[in-house]
Image 1 (cartoon, rainbow, N blue to C red):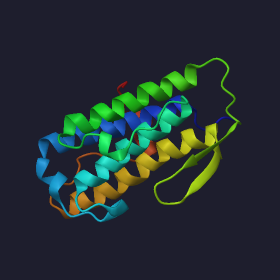
Image 2 (cartoon, rainbow, N blue to C red):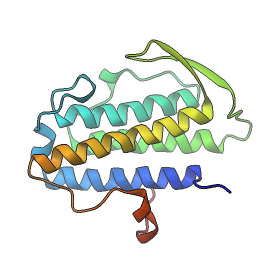
Image 3 (cartoon, helix red, strand yellow):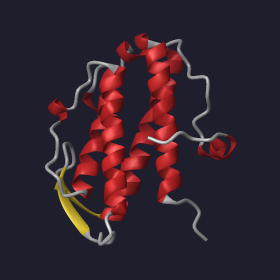
Image 4 (cartoon, rainbow, N blue to C red):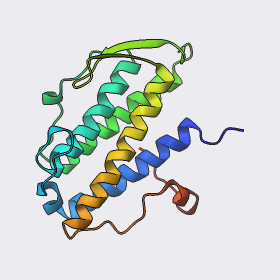
Length: 166
């Protein structure tokens, strides 16, 4: 049995990202809430971290040069989510590559844990679950800041909605 496919996991991340983008546009004050996750000071820093990690892992999976964090814009919600869209397009490109060895180990430097080695397939799952994990944290911060999202982010509800692409 295959419990969850890569396409289903990508759809969950895309739907979650789409909803957060809309929520942050509707409630821009959330971006300025205090948030000390991943060396940040504000929610804006957390969202920047989410999309920057997505992009950097997608670049690794395509054997591209890795963007620096400073090169990833965080000035507007739309710019942040343009980075998400670019990362997901690169991820789809990597998945579509016909001769990818998903069991191949990649060694790569990280910002906080030194150099790590992981299989390509592990990187894909980590990349996507990393986003979901931080969005869950963001939900708590937004709720405490008076701007709770009006949806539940549980995967269980994915059968009840039709996720958008992109």
